[in-house]
Length: 230
Image 1 (cartoon, rainbow, N blue to C red):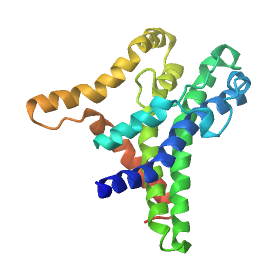
Image 2 (cartoon, rainbow, N blue to C red; image 1 turned 135 degrees about the vertical axis):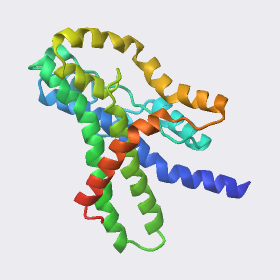
Image 3 (spheres, rainbow, N blue to C red; image 1 turned 90 degrees about the vertical axis):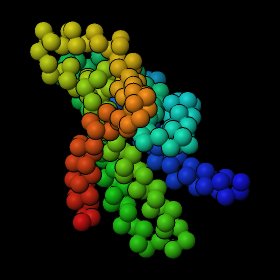
């Protein structure tokens, strides 16, 4: 029993900081970009902060990822409190919303690159601390890449849908925007239904993994190369 508890505590210790940072700073980046483009809604609401405590949703940021880790599912999913953005206050709403949406995944890729760079610093750390710190950084690297790739999917309400909405011609953008009311059901269906079908058929079906693996591998290879890891 003690061994099991120690395993759980160790798993939590190397995942909590990467998960909370990745999820909450993703949201902060949306608010920061909106502020730079003319909308100070997030700033006035006290959400223009890179302090994770300002953005934590107790269930979406902590409980849900923890449950998925303990269940050993092949993916992590979580969310923070959405940062308020008033599109009407942006200088050029249609164009600027693309940048606001892209800022979240962009922040995740920047954090992944920072984690890859910091891995070099573990070389000079004491041997007792090195494995734990390296594992945190490795998890931060991978989690941020997966979150960036996931959020770039063009499914409402994910960030990729808002980027696509900004570049589509209006004749297509209007009906596409109507999909947002069904967005969360589409996201959860993409995650859960193939796995449920696979369990009924006795085969492994992970559609989300098949979709995300190519961009994840691309981002990972690029970031490791830029950070000097061969």
